[in-house]
Structures are given as C-alpha cells and as structure tokens.
Image 1 (cartoon, rainbow, N blue to C red):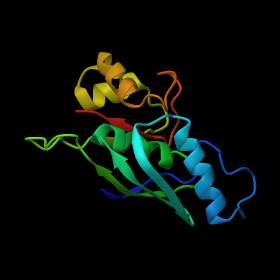
Image 2: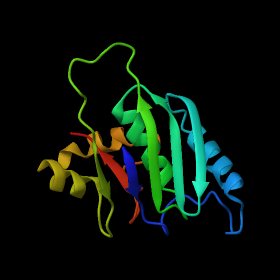
Image 3: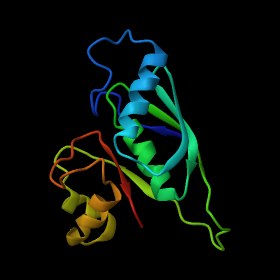
Length: 152
C-alpha cells in the first residue's frame, strides 16, 4: 500500500518519556503494542526509522491490513507508516477487494458526525466503530489526530 501519514503528536504513548530510545527498542514497543490487539497476521515484523514505522507480514484481507496500519500510526511520535503487508488469500479471489478509506479525526468529531459526513447517515456510526475494533473499545472515545478505517 505504501506510505501513510499520521499526526505525530497524537496517539497512544508507548515509547515513554525518553525520546532517546533506540530504533530497535521503539520497534519492539510497536510490535508489542500490535500484538496486544491479536490481529490475524503471520510473520509480523516492525522496524522504526526516526518517526516512520515499517510493518511487514501477511494478512488475509484488506481490513486486517488497514487495522494494523492504523494501530501502528496511532502511536504518539509516529508520523508515517510504511505498509509492506501482503494480503494473501487462501484461494484466488475473483475480484479485488476494495481498499478501505482512512479518516483523520478533527476536534469536535464524533463517530455519528463522521458517519453522517461519509455515509449521509449518522446512525451508521457502528459500522465505523466495528471496523476499528479492537483499537476502539468505546464509540465515544476518539481523539483529534486519530486515524480511523472507514469501510465502504
């Protein structure tokens, strides 16, 4: 998929207070962070170069791929995610699965407001919430700068 931009100053704080951690330590912290979500991914590898996180591995579908990218990007201190994940299906898929959109939360946004903007129906907020599980545990707990997966 390539390089995806994120807001460096927003997200979960996993690097601690010291910005002087070595890239290998940061990569290990990101890997542990991703593992806690129990994504369906094989051979997950993470590397960090300054503010860019690179993720490699194999996933079964585009939604899992996007969830991993969003979880890696929504970490304070990360401004880009280099997505080198491969979607590998158990059987050939006749049509390509469309990629999902990303949405960066703005001040004052709610999932209902985003749903109204994207789908024209505020009541479809749960579709966005479910697409971002397990990173979101509550539909009311989103923050400015956070990047969400928006399913079609």
